[in-house]
Image (tube, rainbow, N blue to C red):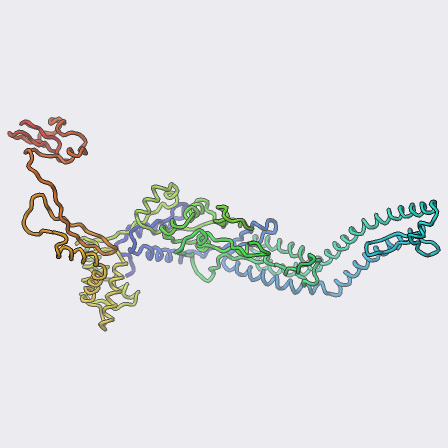
Length: 621
């Protein structure tokens, strides 16, 4: 069977909802469970999606200006995986090529020149300073605490005791000379950090020049692979600048700059050069069709995971995980409506995404201020998805009445029929449907008697001799159980006897309560008279529905009876629900053709709506 039984209206609505691409024309497929709604919708969606183009894909990369706001790149199919592989290879190549460039003879020679020039300037300065001190009769002494000045006499340093024995005038001259030299020394010492900084800057610039040559050559190869993607070229330009700026990180850890004393050097992190490809469906053809069976907030919209770093929880763009909305972007998403509403904030998040047409990854805990950790704000991704919700009718009408946004977002309702007309065409289709279910579930085939009895079963399920039930689950269960009994009896085909046995077994497994009711009647615990006549007593039958099994329960209904006044009694009047006293109505307000004439004490005046007035004297109404 290659068509849907009795669902022409729903089929047309689903096809319309799939075909129209305007905003807000999402689907809500409604009907009781077991009609095959989800199967039909997914089948139609997959047929439509197979003819559509494969959508472009998004990936997240590091934002070198704002690290907490990762950037989203739009890439065609295949380009995302290629960029991710190329960036990983780039880091590996630079970890080898940059240290090799820094260890070359030319680079070492230039580095030695810078270091020797700095040493020469340092030595010349202190030689000149020492000469100035000697001219003043002093000697510049290097100590562990720094530099000191001491007076000299006959080529020997004057100790403190000898200095105290000198005449006051001579001591004053020495102190004046020390002050002058100390002033020069202070100026020199203030210049030393600047000289060291200049030297470090020269060395760093030398490293950058050596690394720049390697980096530019490596990234030029990547630019050639993505020359038609402007967003990727801009990203590679930022990568080039950052790798040149941090070229020292690609050197071995023992050759890098100074580290924090007492702490081991952390390994270099190159995560900022990775590419987080959210979805990679290049092996698939057509648009994606995604069914989310657990539509939590994070499963729908993704999440940014955290990991422990130095005693705190932190995250970055490489820990962003996609949701089913990301996988369905550019295609279709099927969600059970009841499960969606059972998840906190999932429905609100879905509405917000569909209304804004943007897909934003955010932490529900942070949005509710329940956690406080280092987080990120990824750039939102444009959303183009068709959502199909599946639920029952009561849920659809409840959402339509209680949520104003629901009607704006789900403008197409596909209502499934619960029964179809019992005619020759539909009986043939029903037989084809049973054959299809037998083949799909690998069951034993049915003979003619089994098919006829199964169709009778469908009529009873519809509670109408002129209708057939479209409840696919009940029919599939009937065929599966009948095939089981046929297999147990080693029969090649399913016969009417197996169908009857299946029905009887289903009733037997579910009729514990019915058996108890009937037993109480048989034993006289519940009195039900079935013969004769009694004043003020009738028998009633209430139908009890317990799961998928229903049965009748007889009950005695009694009323108090007494001799009346010979008048017609209006029950609604007696309970004050008739909208007024009919005796006070004007009898001439009714058409004469609707009235009645009576010679007795009263007449009942009626029209098409029933009793309207009671007149206590003869005459025409």
